[in-house]
Image (cartoon, rainbow over all chains, first blue to last red; front, side):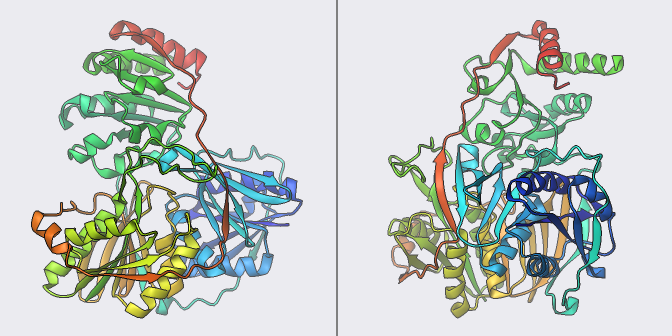
Length: 326
Length: 250
């Protein structure tokens, strides 16, 4: 049974999350015994042959000048055409902004089920099962698929990309689709970069988040300086976002982003249940809070009880010193 | 202009989640039910558009058991004109089944704008909006952070990793809203009184066979108890050592 993987490209480059999807597809394919085939929609080939290293034996490429940016109607047509051709047992997307938008449309087009934002896949009795967080991570559910193909999207940063190094080049095959760009009623006119050079929270390895204990937006430079020293992305609690100190795109937790970094530093965040739900899957959690009873200490691997205004600058300096030593 | 806002009743975000007796779904005991927070932004945007145009109708629609009518009533109190309740006693029907039932109803109503929250904060699937769009053949934008309407075209910004996509589209369309799009209003006392007289049309929902089956629900493994490294600035060198040597994350 073959597995189809949607290969996401932006600005003519394959996005790293697609390598994570290929890695997991290869693991599942080893159990099910079938090839891993990619499908990509792009204006031109973003270097798909190189994905052989990541486990794809073949990548189907649908090209159209309107595919330089995300074009849902055309992308759905491309994936549907690939499903028709490959007849896969499963189709795997990344649960990225694009994957979370595209996968439900593909599922509706095919009339099959989708398990979104999965954190693990397993084969039980020859069939795929998917486990995914619900209630923002307060619980998980395991789903089975009653229709074929099974469609899943994988949470970014959870699945390891393949080590690579010994695969041969993937065969890149043109995929013909019937697509009338003139009939499309929605198109992207512009892509605005909001935080140039910074990793998005959902894809960051290190996150430093600030809470209401910082007393005002003018004190967020404490958090930003520590983030800069750690090469981290800045996050925020809901209280801070609702107070207008930070944009909603910075919010971590239920009604914000669920994150899985290697290191999460919570600065002056007490740890409301909604916040804990969104960051408890971080590998290592550090809490800095002056209230020793704050719930954040219950999930933190390491805590410092103290005033963020004193502790955070000292930590920033210590990290900088470490960086200088190499 | 007719706008339909599809809303969902969900467990309050304060809920301490427990697994129910079936081992598959939430234990409903003691749960407070609320309007899905993201749906508030969708409803607010629809109301603002109706107010700006000075005409048109905002219909709220929800699929679920009898209890859903409380949430529909709340939406009417916020300012929606009338409600449609697609009634079913099915527990957690999957996204495709819900989308198919909503799409069948929307097909008849033919609204210019169909609104959703970007996801429901219970199953977090974020599927029903884009599925409805696909079933109806409409354009759709998810994670809507900004929206401007001019006649039958709209300019929409959607959040993506590290930026925003600006989408131009022609109605009819499906939009799934993110937090931050606007500031949802509270229901006024007058609104609450008026809502009591607004109609809720109840219909039996037709659900297709499930495409997904819930095998189990589980609580995540509790994190091992952490440790407080120390107090104040003096604890910083030890923290840095632990992060480097023990956790190996810096």
